[in-house]
Amino acid sequence: TPQQVTIPVVVHIVLDNPDLVTDAQVMSQIAVLNNDYNATNPDISQVPPVWQPIIGNSRINYCLAQRTPGDEPTTGIVRVTTAPGRGFDISGGSPDVKYDKSGGSDAWDTQKYLNIWVTRLSGNYLGVAAPPGMGYPSEQEGVVVLYTAFGTTGSVGRIYNLGRTTTHEIGHFFGLIHIWGDDNGACTRDDGIADTPLQGDNTYGCPSFPKTDNCSPNFPGIMFMNYMDYTDDACMHLFTAGQVGRMRDVLENTTRSLMS
Ligand code: ARG
Ligand code: ZN
Ligand code: CA
Image (cartoon, rainbow, N blue to C red; front, side):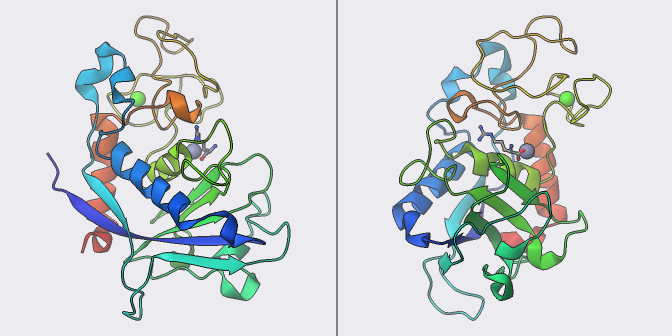
């Protein structure tokens, strides 16, 4: 079993009214992350019995940063007031929210902090990740989460209201891809994780178990309650041991400096 680690987090709230996301809302999100990454989430018992034995516990903990990069005391929460309607333009790929000079908020040293930007997103996106080692400029590494899909209170909406978007995006940050392998319904590409079943495409809503598809036609079917699917927040409950292995590998080899 991996050792407990705690990663300092800075949350940048970049909105025309950044006070919409209160400190309490930020703390509700941190609490969700600590549950989901330690398999202590209250809904873990809803994992079907057949998959209970492969529930993964990453022992990754998250805390709001207590010191700034300049070693001043901080809440770990930065609020920046930006122009109305401004946010993260995914299609244009323009990371304005990640830079002071374009009305956003500069990352804190991405070697030392996990940066989370909470903002608007173009289209219907809930979140997007810029994982380490994927060619992003280092000052863009981190995750962006829609302000209505962040935490469990305050400005959060109705379906993505249990903080699982951030759980999912940090999964990407630590090297996970979607559980269906991003191959548009085919069974050709896997997620590269041995203990997750093959799956054709993403799953929305809240299916009942068991659910099979063309790639996993037999019981127990697809693992739609995995954090790396697209189901509703209330219907996602686990990372597998295999997924945890991947995340710890990235953490300990690529982002080791986050651990100290
Ligand atoms: N669509 C987003 C992505 O691809 C996140 C989906 C999160 N799902 C959720 N139930 N919160 O990264
Ligand atoms: Zn995703
Ligand atoms: Ca798999």
